[in-house]
Image 1 (cartoon, rainbow, N blue to C red):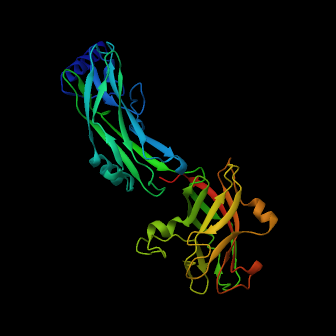
Image 2 (spheres, rainbow, N blue to C red):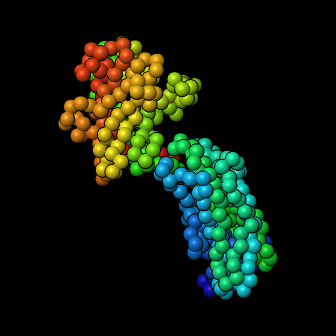
Length: 347
């Protein structure tokens, strides 16, 4: 056993002579005597061995978006002999190829921040004398970042001064920027109901997944996730992927949705989760069919229309009005009860 330990120790020392240390042993190579490596991490005190430590998500509320939003990445010097007595300059580089690989592996479509959002990007990072960490700061303009935008930054260490070495598996990092309020997410739509007073063959679809998509700090668009993501050739009236609420047509034996209509849930700005209004994404009313939405006028249904802070589940009772039909309850065309069970945050 002692012989095996010695061999492993000798092997580790040999690795330190290379320009790029391969610290893939489940420990930090900086623990090896006389070794000094540079690594990137979301933490000021260095990286962990977990792959998840390469990824950090930065969340913003729409109201906090600004023309100068700073994303800070620690550049860490790992050393068992303590900090150096002189400044160390580390050169970073964008790693768009890493984003492409991430998208391929995850089935996502993240992209590096657009050039017109980059305010400042100094790829030379200084670790001051006597310190173990310096900071790369990317300043971006997030004012126009929307909740459906998927912007990410990815950087790697391109160069360090000799005799320092670059960590072989902690040399890169991803930072995501997401714009979300607390209601945003994927929800399972089950056990709800609807009544179309004009076309009774239109009924509740019974089982689907919807998204609540952030509009502002207390407002979300509610759209069907299935039709929005899986039918890219179908378009809504704004020539975008379909923002709509699915229903089932018994006469057509197929799912469908109401054109020019998609509900928007307005939660109480005080954060208690109560839904105070429901409106139509395409207008109140929309300019073509005259469709609009309103919270249920029934006091009990209105009181029960809310987001639960414990389960994150949502119940919403509301009406759809139509410019050409006024024969339903309170003059509406359709009564909806949407019962949403929280599934997950949106990626």
